[in-house]
Length: 228
Length: 192
Image 1 (tube, rainbow over the protein chains, first blue to last red):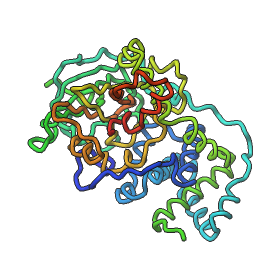
Image 2: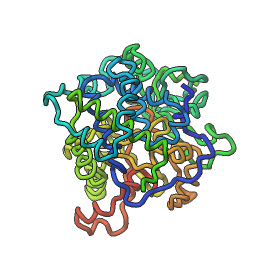
Image 3: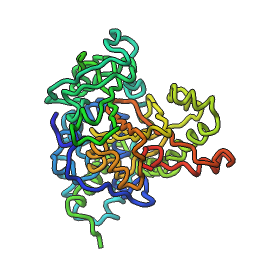
Image 4: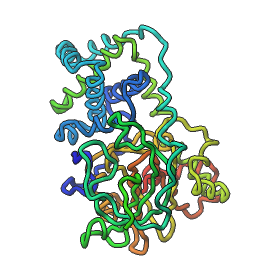
């Protein structure tokens, strides 16, 4: 989808700000979201990584830009829990109302109850298997081929960045068959297809404004590509 | 005083509400959160990637294997931490500089570099590094000479990229530990 997440080439965001001695987590709630994601994934409630990414893409664009990385994860998790019927938005809202009158220490004390049972399902087979697949049609392209990318995006999840649409590049690596995120994110099956690294000259992507002697290499699935 | 902006206070509260609901259902306990913190503060971090780089700087046979098949070459290190189903290592040379990004989300080789820093996940880096890599790198303190070609790797699938920085002069005379200390996270992303 043409969402705010598709940031490549957008202008106006200013300088990259680096922190000195940055911790892995800035605040406890970030680690809480990380652990919640793992707990939800262990239950198999996440569906798959492509569904999770698409849930993040669908959050409010303004929130996407301001709520930071773990704020985006949290919104994505809420969407998936609600859509799968595991937890309704109303339940979270009600809990927020209940907790908002407590100070943080009280909230944490309430949260830190022992686990009711210690058995957790192992990560679903899909999570362990990763996204590579054995069987697939032979790749249509070989290293050195020139290809043109799709001209249009998709209303759903896709991994063809908008800045690389309708552009000519050359195949620089061929990686075998991988789960196709565009279908997998929507419950339409894995539909494994060939994955390639495609190199694009800066001038092809950005015209005269492109910096000289720079190229961008993007991992692209075969359905995005046509022979040029 | 808590100077967190109101909407981030709300996000924090929602995170705690979700946490408490998961705890109630027996799916999460507080020690899980401590474990996640310990995992990424202590066990999984750029020190892993640094071991790989330090080895490649002095072991030519390993370096060849690493560049040919990163996934296979790092197996012996037994890193955990996820997000590296397939690893591709790209080498900086006197004619080429490599830099890694994920413009669509924030894909990053966790097992080798730990969790990504904020700037890697923020819009400024993700939007600009593909369009004006030389300017962004210069702003970040890395002047790439005009004689060097720049390759930006946009991690748009499940392949994860790590940069093999050039070996500093004199590094071969150091111990393995000293060499590892020379390797920074930012150099393995390609911004230093």
